[in-house]
Length: 475
Image 1 (cartoon, helix red, strand yellow):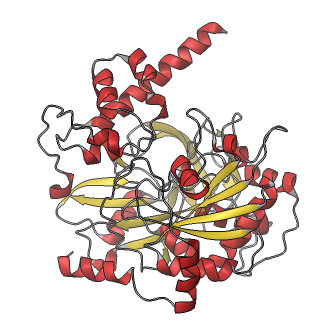
Image 2 (cartoon, one colour; image 1 turned 90 degrees about the horizontal axis):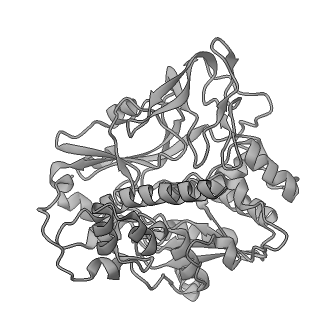
Image 3 (cartoon, helix red, strand yellow; image 1 turned 45 degrees about the vertical axis):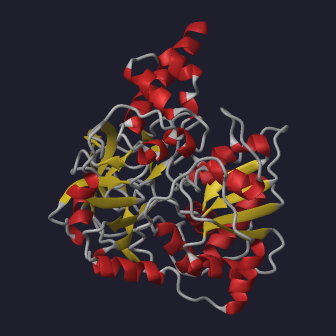
């Protein structure tokens, strides 16, 4: 993609919106979190591209691990006939989520199949035969505004329909709303920041499904018991802000809060700090300060689950890269279990591609296995050129403190890197490695090109295992 086209695309993000809406947005002010953060290139090349429906796969491989927590347990067997939206994997444990068939057809087999990282996971292989949906799912485009379910029924529907957070972690959504009697949600924070470079699906969902998103927020307000919902959105999305402001004008419980552009604005704790000024203590959840945080696309699928009885059977995915022709930077609606290679081939892998990343360039992971399949949390597939992927020569730590300044969690990344490298995991725990959100700001800001995040991720994994083993030994 030429520099001229990049500039042209960037200018499209800041085009004029109506004076009335601009004046109203200005009255809200623009906020951000104060501690740490960085400013990577936005590269939102697919911002202007409407969501396209990707062709159905002939065979879908449906992982039982499309969420944080325990894998779902298959409830179908080889030879069973299934329909779109039918339960095929049942949540196994408190932190788990149901999995539903993304296509109709016959169960070919249940097997261990490698994911994008190359790790073998339990999966159900389904051969497609048409596109027959479960009879209780409303597949029409009609918008249903009247909410008939109460709080308990909504939470039950979240669980039944396998709703998970689509902002990255895929945490089972219903758990956030299962509050103890001593817990109260004052603010429902809706994350529309989409601060990761390249990714554009939240922006497109807001633009194309505005009313459904707002109804989803109204549903979440009932489930949370909160009196106020605040939509946080970075100000490089003027059209989306304008649509949200117009859609919520006069709404007694929902407001829009434009935010300054800063990464990682969409992280839960940073978003809460930016919007409410409240600080979530280390080791605590947002409800500790009276907040529940959900992604804006999660609100859309919540609308579908409650009003249409539709489970998550598709992913919203941006396919992009600097070397991808402008017209081929796409936002797709992809059935779960679709081969990611078919998605890449549909766009065309640029010749200079050295790395393919699933997720954003800051927090995503390199695709180690091209023969993997789409899951609920696959927000993007990015083609990174050799020039971009090439790491600079690593030198000794300069003790410049830039990683400390950049860390939004107030940690000392250079120290955690050293402790992890030396396998001093007790020291990793002492210096708060478990509070790291793995945003990558430390490594992004390091002038010595130290692989800080790489070692912190290893250290966090080892330290977590050590903590769990210690807890188990006490039982």
